[in-house]
Image (cartoon, rainbow over all chains, first blue to last red):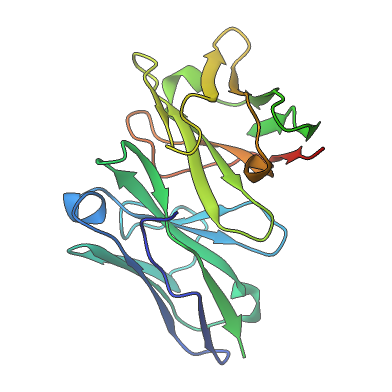
Length: 111
Length: 118
């Protein structure tokens, strides 16, 4: 069972903005562990989107952004495109579990 | 690049050894993980292996049944999975962390499918 909670789905029209929350606790996000975000297109391998809370790997457009505050993190996608339709997951380390943890996942739909 | 292999159909209670061959970098210099995804479900971190010291970590759901290891001479990561259960059916990915931390996971292997069924 995931210890990071995300909304099951979010949707918006092309060109609009969506945000995805990732709610954790004092043993993971709240312990100052960095949060990363992953995009999984249908039938594809997960891909790193954001690391260290707000950094983008080379090749990731600046339409994608990340932030962290307290025990939560947020992924933002602006200028939504049909190619952004995917499942998105947050991830971090949990000191109580002594292991990695992922969010429950959020499906983004472009209307 | 990471290439996973070794998956297959196995009966409940059976065993498998998954492999993840690395190229373009030295696997022993990075923290490595196995992550699985059951059909139609989300990502679940399974196990990790540190670079320095070779410390291992496991999710509670697999502790005592799964063993992570690596062969530096072959630049390959392994996951020995024993006492398989139906709920272990999933696509198993290997993923690289940083030299010092489990996350972020990048890159990921293509995954190898484990199906547990009689």
